[in-house]
Length: 165
Image 1 (spheres, rainbow, N blue to C red):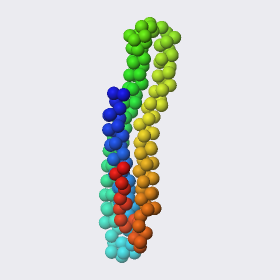
Image 2 (image 1 turned 90 degrees about the horizontal axis):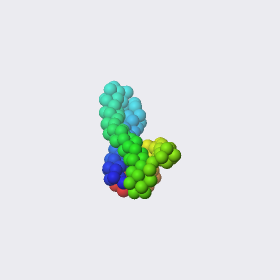
Image 3 (image 1 turned 30 degrees about the vertical axis):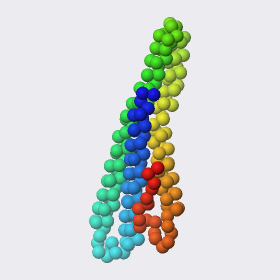
């Protein structure tokens, strides 16, 4: 419970980075589409280096956004790994101080075993949250694409606007 607000903050930052990654992918996809659809012009005027430079710059921006998202994972993993230790300490403290029961080997083994079983599930929680956020952002992009005005405009020519929610 003590790390809940920190976990929420990290989850919000992960969601923000996921949106940035998707915007960068959209921009890079738009550039690739434009250059591929005008390949004759690119070849005629020898614009290959300019095209590669623009696509490369868009890719670098995408990689920076991915790095920002990936830099949050060590903090999430630390919180998940230490939470099982706090759970074990809390269980032993509760038994000893509140219930006034001495900790014998059978109780210690039971508590340690159950905490070890829970540890892997707790460690996986941040990864699963990040995966769900990526899925949510992708679904929102597809919804925006399908709901986009088809009045003669190509969907790759304009950035898709997503709701902040």
